Length: 224
Image 1 (tube, rainbow, N blue to C red):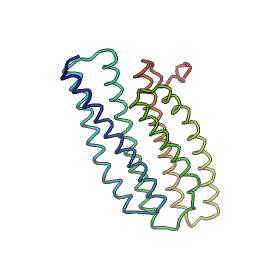
Image 2: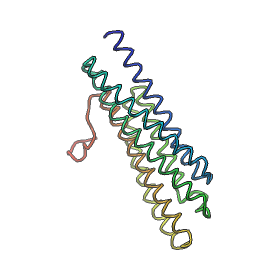
Image 3: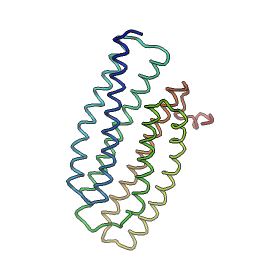
Image 4: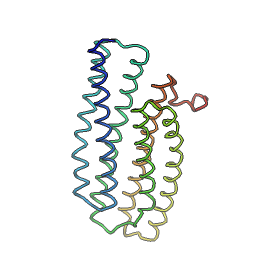
């Protein structure tokens, strides 16, 4: 392995760490904006999403340049392929966080929907844990931790279903808050999708470490 190639790989890893940190922080602050009814914080999340988009493009260009210049094989090739996939998932998480922040801005203008937002915060906490652990699995090349993240996705799905039922009940009891409850449902859906993207990252860590492709494995009748 040439010194130049190693430097390029190190640069790519650092770029991924920087993007991961920004995405993780934006998701946390988007939920905080909902919880605190803070329109200004919601706006900051939306504005920072532009930085996430730019970093995603930069990482993709770095990956393509590395493939063209060095033609890596084996583990190095798997790493770059995995980074390309994770890069897209992180960008999508950034978009979903910005969507949550947009709802937070509008929800701040009306009466609060409840202290726990019908379970949104519990679900978001679980999704945040999934995202953090999937990124830790990437940093430490820990396939076992990635497997744990994949299992946690069922918990988020269950919480999402419970939240939907609770919001439906609240809609009947407080029809004057219908618009905010619809926005709350949208936030729940965005959180559930973030958990899905964290699961995708975990699956790519498994691919990187073990060389196993497990995306859509259930559809192909394979054990996961």
